[in-house]
Image (cartoon, rainbow, N blue to C red):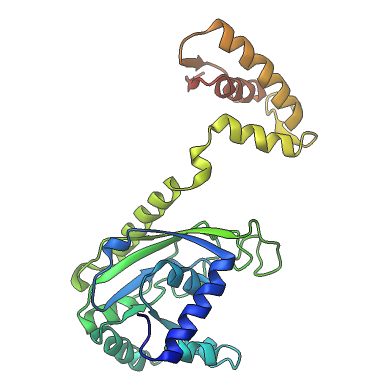
Length: 293
């Protein structure tokens, strides 16, 4: 049961219940989580990463929070209830001590090793803070990757936070827990590599990849039929979404009737013709094989 008191348990269940109304989180690799205390090190995409991570984790997580945010009157009561650990970057020893105590008590502690929110949606440079906690506590480190959150209103996509509409509701996200690492093996290079691998695993889990490529193209082109999509660098001619779709469908029918082979080779320069040919082959449910022109 999460928490050490009735108040904390009530807070945990109410907060997670509300969050589940907004987010649908798929957790991968939960079996990799150790039974005792350990350190979680995730990538940092949005302002609500802590909420997403807590929804995916079966046990309460104690987050290391920048003291500047910890002391904000609006946030402090909630962070106190969640037993977050404030950290002053100029004087980190107290936070390291408190994090170590929590881990030794069997709790999960989480610190975002990038030290700041991503401005590009990609994994940034990792800082040494998590190494100091892991070695001081002598604990295992579990890398964890949060996927599908870039583009959320709480991310910096479009060069701004908050000032954009949600793409979906409820919002879907994937959280992948990696294999645990001993403190001495959890170097910046190793954790960075493991996070990138987890990111690739998450990408393969995205539901849109289960759809046929041609169907995805069909849907996208239908949305803006009059918009210019292709400008041919050879003659400057343009091709709209609607024209590309129409020509490709016509060609795909001919390819389907005349060529029984599953693969069709395409020998064309980089041009609108090559775009049409590749899309037509995909719409014919065949595999385009591009050859050097």
